[in-house]
Image: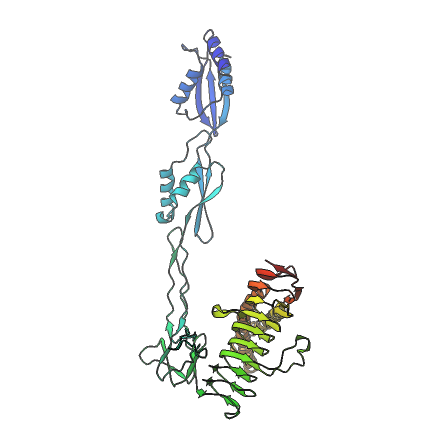
Length: 555
């Protein structure tokens, strides 16, 4: 093509040529030819010179265009032709509705001027964009982009909400002790946990104050307020009090055994005896019970608080309103039979509204509203936990053999089953129950909201009738009653919405319950997770058992 242009330039020198003027019109580069005779022939160099004079040298004309211009110049008559589109680069700012994110859309230059970084940056400042929020590197990349994309260049600062009051327990919750050997080398396994007793006026919980929100900012520097944290009060009863010199400190109002809730502490009266036996009789106590020795056969201990046993429990019944801790083992002489569990009456049973923690157990029945934690082993026992069952806590041996273990939120052990392939039943999850609970809450919420909406309509109709005198005293009494009912329904709706949040969380956890095998799973272990069933036919090493697509999966 260059050779063709050179030949055309050579031919052109032998003829008369018209003049040419380059200009921009209607966003197009145009050439205007006139019939004036030139002293110098029009060729490639002349065209570039004319573009330069017109300050349009940024246009890089193709060989085809150059040939066309030279050809038109030889016609020796007036003519105006369009060559190519012409426009300078431009940009448009795009901001979201919250003014937290700013983006730029660049329209590329068509033969015109490219955007200059400093000019665009100054334009952003003139638009009141805060300079600290502009990502200069991203802005440079955006100006160099020729795809006409919308690219982010500035981000505001989100406000940070304050934190609600938090509570910190000031007494030792984990009472596990390090085992210490005596001078003769023996270890007292009864001394594995402390039973805590706290004196009068002792600090038991402190409140960490709520915090203010940190103000945010839009990309234009306008403040955005966050929500301050809420002041949350202690839960008080007659066993604790707020310290007279520090409103964020909770102290004991009596001596006793403490246990903590989310926002408070309760101090139980404590009954402490050496051994629970036929000599002591059955124990029914409003508070916590500490047995420093052992619990003998046929004894019943029932407490509204904790039950803490330093020694063994054999063929006894323990019922606690909070936690049960047995530092040694629990034994029963009657073997649990899964096939006859409806008729099974255990010789040894534990029921706790909190957590059950034991070192080992054999042929017992244990039910905990929260977790069941067993350090070394459990054999032929019936275990049922509202939370998790963990066999092998505190780095114990962690073996579960025989019996039945039921846990709503999952379980874990180092070893499930035995080399003798003893039948062992593992049952996890309560998805069906949680779904029904979720549905029940949603229906109740819809029903209460609908009723509240209807009552509001009736109330608004009464208000629209005008003054009290016009409405009348009977209607006013009805309006007040409706207003009170709406208030009660509103509180109920708020309570149900809070329940629904917890139920949805429980639903998520129930869908994802797992059985963790830390070391080995033996054959003949029957597994149920959310109504999906399987029986292990071979040995498995460390694995996680879950339910996927209604089937038991080993991962």
